[in-house]
Length: 301
Image (tube, rainbow, N blue to C red; front, side):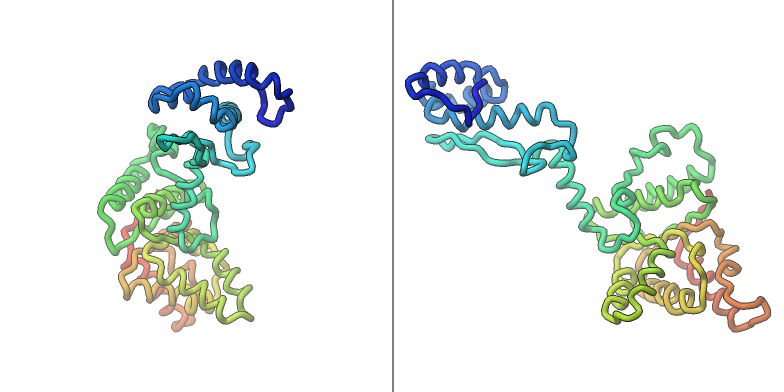
């Protein structure tokens, strides 16, 4: 196949074009385009360059294994032939990898707060081992999955609390729920509690940024708080940050979801800031635990 930029002698152009066009119409996509639009040889000859460009573009796409290896300047896009009744032209449209990326970007726009990762945000329950290989699931895990599937179909103001040891799958399960809600067009947020507090501390000298972080998580329609109780608990983090988030979301009936290595019964102890005899501290930590209990249905994995 002759390349578009290959130098040729003018007196050889007719024969070269003829052979080239004969080869081009062996391309199934071009053959279908010719058949659908009832194109004559003259049409093909007049727009030979467009057909060559399309053919070369498709050959690059045929061996492509993903956007990371796409050799094009416009990654994720491929040429599509167009006939307007007179002229043949080409437009750019998403290839299969480009379409996947477009859908991902569209989905991620619904994650209005995310201090975890895009990979976590893109988790789909039906692609996890919990669904593809359910033989290893415990009875408690099955109950949690049933609750998540039910919530996807009928969201309520009451969230879900998953507790269990590290690596039990609680974060994956609730991240997949946030993904499902985002696919329904709902705005969601996923935040790791320890990372969020680090961001808040880093913004101490910037009041507007500090307020922005807090406003994003207290206002998002659906929020996952990951790693509850794993953070370095202080009176500030417990009462001014976590307490503020919980109170606002509870009052406004905004569904909140939690993962933790602590059960609900263990939360009060996890949020102890001073010695056990401090009655004021005991009251505050009990208030945190009671507030969370009232906001969720809990499952231990």
